[in-house]
Amino acid sequence: MSDSPRRRSAVALRYDAMDKRSKILAQGYGELAERIAAEAEKHGIYCHAAPELVALLMELNPDEFLPDSLTQIIAELMIWLYDVAENSTER
Image (cartoon, rainbow, N blue to C red; front, side, top):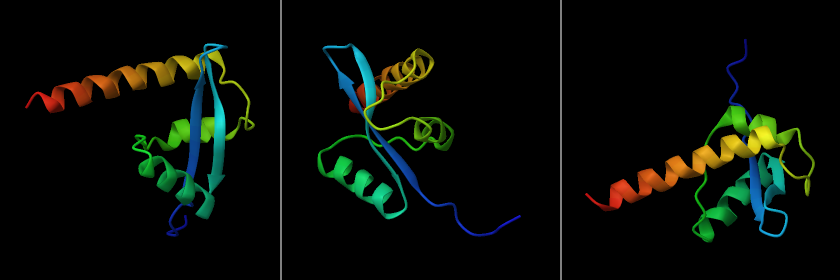
């Protein structure tokens, strides 16, 4: 067992309205992952920390569309996030 921290990984997704599917826009580890997260934050894009989901997405190639099974997971996550955001502004 190792006590060293895991190297951060990040994946940026983009919804393609023409194809009605999401695809990998950018992905990386370490410093590149930090840059992806910083760029998202700079543009007000929410970053969700889900190591298991990121690990699955890291297996895909950039510009590759997400498989339907992952698209369903992402859609459910987005619905949940919108619900959380809507409920938090009502308080």
